[in-house]
View: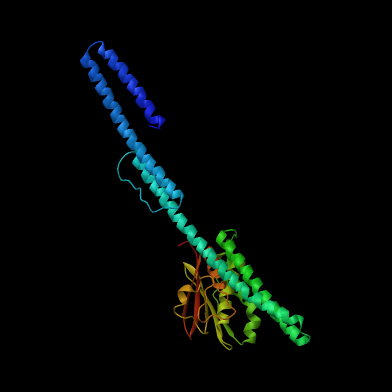
Length: 330
């Protein structure tokens, strides 16, 4: 009896019972015996239920200790009545939530580890190339060769810069630290601005651009929308052969405004389609320069703008990206 809350009431009850029995004894022996028996019975009932309650509380305490150590496998759900049972059920609910959150955290840790491994791999390739070329550059006297090596280094630096900037944008979007604007944006202006960085490449590779634009407006952020479309257009160009064709068309309904970006390139394999918007995913038709985060960034941006992006493709027949800017939350 180490619990004061248990033995102190029992001692007090015993003293009261003894005093009452002594008082009753002055009247009658039978009255004293009855008083003592009733008192002892009440004390026994009190002790029985109190001990039972404390055992249940001790079991809950042991369970919570196991939970604190990371063991979520025990089940304390109780369907009986009473305040203690209600407490047990509420604890069960809280622990279930903690278990779910713990699983999410573990999944996030695994995802972060995989992402760091992918980032390390993506940065390692240009860094290795730059180190090798810089060593060759130190001992190279030919001006033409030196220029060639310098161009390689500059190209790899640009690739690393783009990769780091894109990863930072993705991280900020994930963390919710970037505010996506909610302005009225004209889709024609977004498409024209998205094509500008690729005009020279399109001309050099003799890729024809066909535009069928029905202008419409949507609520979003013009700069981020341009970023999203540029990554999709870049992907289409990378997978289109010289002399190929890029088509961009738009239409509108009462529910959404739609942009379709279509190429007649090599297409995407059926097994790669479900993963095309995953970070660092490389399909079998991906170019050697692809790092697999451009389309992931596009999807993240468009989701923030209440838009959806999907893709259909067939190997050898080209790829079609469909973007829907919804006019209301669905």
